[in-house]
Image (tube, rainbow, N blue to C red; front, side, top):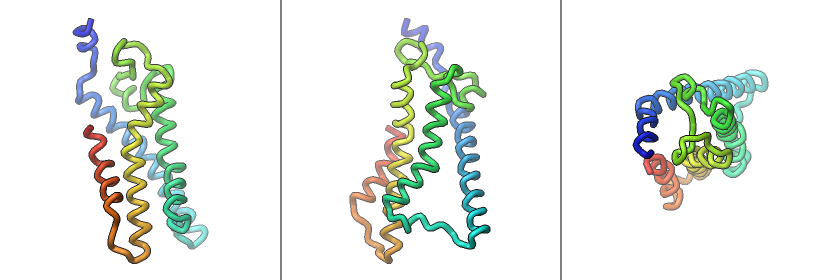
Length: 158
């Protein structure tokens, strides 16, 4: 039975193309956010400085407007009747339980989404902390912050 299940596994190239389509969807969301910031700048004459909220506030705002909506997109589309994001639908792929080949459970899709977004969130955490430290004029950064940045880049490979 394992051999039959293996034959239904999508090719790596299909999965990469599906991911690229989904990244275009995410990029569209990011462009909408950028347009909103630009409109706010034009209407108020001020540029938003998220660091005024402090590193934690900036991270929370970044999570709320970028990471959370992307996570909701991934979760809702993969747990929908189609079992697929827009990219997966385009390439006729579905998210299934790897052991059974059946529909993946809601908790598994939630965990899958969290694992996908964890490196991204660690990277945002690092960037905001680097920016907060640099904004004080300090050019010395703690080792733990470099470590977090490296972990964010190594995690996807793992």
